[in-house]
Length: 144
Ligand code: HEC
Image 1: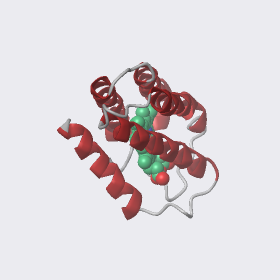
Image 2 (image 1 turned 180 degrees about the horizontal axis):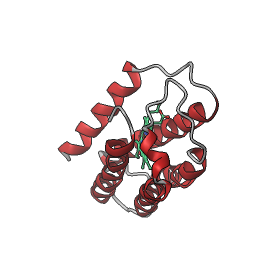
Image 3 (image 1 turned 60 degrees about the horizontal axis):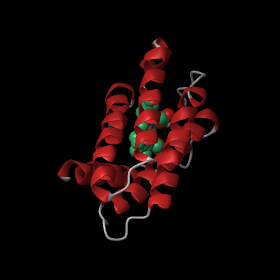
């Protein structure tokens, strides 16, 4: 359980420490996609912690939301755009297949999370999702 909280702490800090209001075009779109993923993760995090009030519909909707956004990652990064204030590394466009595979991994992990029935299973599913975020960020994002 601890690693999940640590994971959220990192993203909560990231959201407040860096303002990306001046991003435009493809960079803005992909940042917005990532922010939606992050917001859905927060919904899941709350549910993972509440076995008594576990809301299956809410969990399934949030997990599916992540899956849809993960599915869109390849399209959002299709064109190389390194305009500031991007945090994307140029390596993404050296081997798009490798990058897209990581997006697909996230989609699969999110789809698995969409079917969990209780908070404990959601914690495990979220650990898999978190590992998938990290796998991509550590390789392809400047701040990770
Ligand atoms: C396939 C690769 C990949 C996966 C998987 C991935 N990300 Fe990202 N993420 C990126 C890249 C690349 C950036 C930097 C984009 C930019 O700045 O242009 C980023 C940026 C972000 C940002 C910052 C957005 C902003 O406003 O600057 C957040 C938040 C984020 N990701 C959350 C997540 C979470 C949460 C997950 C997992 C549930 C996840 N990401 C999975 C590649 C990925």
